[in-house]
Length: 151
Ligand SMILES: CC(C)(COP(=O)(O)OP(=O)(O)OC[C@H]1O[C@@H](n2cnc3c(N)ncnc32)[C@H](O)[C@@H]1OP(=O)(O)O)[C@@H](O)C(=O)NCCC(=O)NCCS
Image (cartoon, rainbow, N blue to C red; front, side, top):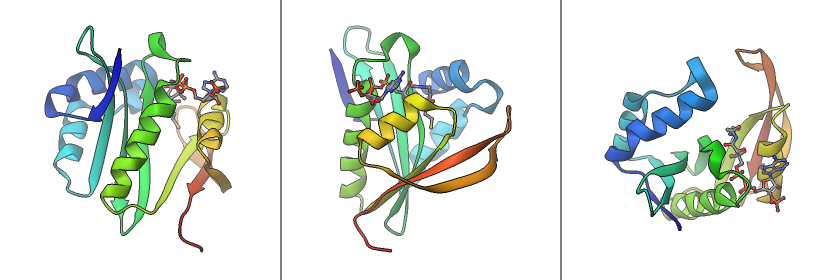
């Protein structure tokens, strides 16, 4: 069974391991996750396989005056295609709203179709591109927002 909950300090090593397997040299380290968990404006969520006790997915949001910047969205490759990212994002945004976030934003590589479809399914709308945002390889980012406030 998969459970959704707030990330704990003891999850940081596994989160960094999952990141490294997906994002290589650009991955967050255990220390990066530990530092983020100490920020009172950040909310981090995980999906945990209750059989192994290990986390299989994570995502975080940083609250900047009501705008929540979502990062570190990832699911272990062995667990993809089961709705885990969708559930985790809904849980993360609900926890973010409790912490005062009204509008959520995130970015994705223009070639990352699974992520783009996921965000569109969750109601995010593309508001443009940021040229050359990503390195290794260099690529444009699509910027998404899911807003409650009018701009
Ligand atoms: C993107 C990612 C988080 C999706 O995780 P997941 O748990 O497999 O996604 P879900 O099973 O919750 O899928 C939810 C929706 O996302 C979309 N989606 C997910 N995988 C997809 C794929 N391979 N192709 C197209 N759409 C996809 C679909 O709309 C899907 O809904 P559906 O099943 O009704 O069609 C996962 O592929 C991943 O970790 N990728 C590597 C890290 C990454 O790129 N993170 C995002 C950085 S911006």
